[in-house]
Image 1 (tube, chains in turn blue, red):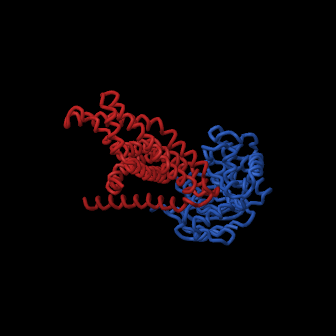
Image 2 (spheres, each protein chain N blue to C red; image 1 turned 45 degrees about the horizontal axis):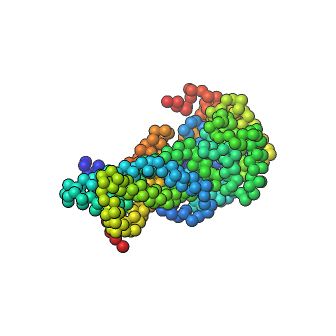
Image 3 (cartoon, rainbow over the protein chains, first blue to last red; image 1 turned 120 degrees about the vertical axis):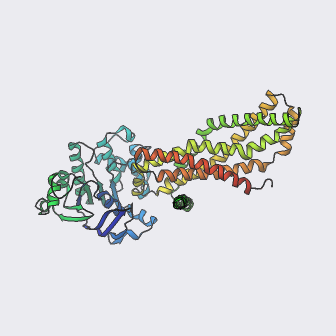
Length: 248
Length: 260
């Protein structure tokens, strides 16, 4: 379970988060929607300890991670799998070495078992046989799937997805959505998905939360969000230029 | 107004000194912690050491030749014909204590320090460093420690290699090209050149290695703003490392005893 309590984060004078409260139950897929630059990725990085909040708390299974030192945080990262917006594959390593990286640090499997898990993770994302390719030899969609294979290889309890459908075509984006749902069904992971793609949101979400002006302004099931009376939410989910959200 | 500018410059200088000092402290803290990244350490030994050999060979050779030339001219002009053979110890001392460690330091900061900043900077802006953390690797232990250690060990090796080439080229210019008496040249060199002269140059080179790698990693880790930011980090690394080497060299020369 993830609990975000009154979270604040600023970069210089830019107050990105101004008191975010959010609870994600075990096994649930929570989608956080919001404009570009609204602080969604910052929220994700705070959840895994990549950034330190200015105020507020983040509890992972009742352990407050905002007070942990670097060593203790490293232990907590074992619970998380993170799919980066730009995949963030290590470009000096092969696909297999990328997927193996987390296994080597988070688990105590033998080299043979790790090889099996690497092959299994790649097969799970539909990419068998690319083990020896370098990241620059892959398409954008393949990189995303390798990033996903790397994140799930060591069986994390919580998956964080940063814009999983951004930068790839709609068909591949839908394939990624199917993968997110499949991972939830097969592995029972708790998931937080950051996106501004409403089609993806409706497909994968158990609940949707909208981040606007540094706060969560609406939270509910996809149907509740569709029926929301909040004009900001309505403008965003229908992708209209006119409304309370200023585009310029 | 001028006071304000001076104050902000001093503040920024102290802030940057604090940042690089903190990184060095964290590197020392992580030096003996597991897991040790042997693979990266070996790769960096090759990158810093083996791949620098051609440029060090060339620099040391021409450094030795020109130092031999000027020593020959100096002795010939101010002491008289025949005295050039006494230049041997001066050439060897000057090269091993000062010129070769500095040349190696400057060459390595241009070749290796800049590439460290570019590689780590690119990893930073493409979120690969965040990925390292999320996959359980400590970025300092994984990226900085192996590079700093490799530079610490490889710079003295390169300097020793450069000493041999430089001293030989000084000999070559004087004895082979200018016909200086070989026996007197070698006798004087062996009589006056102490092991400590070479060792103090190697100690300096180790310190330069720490400085180059720490500055390269520091600039890479603080790179931001895309390709332009990486370019800026690379340039800053070369400038800061080169200046630091020249300044540190003076203080190390003062601090290290002239003879043991």
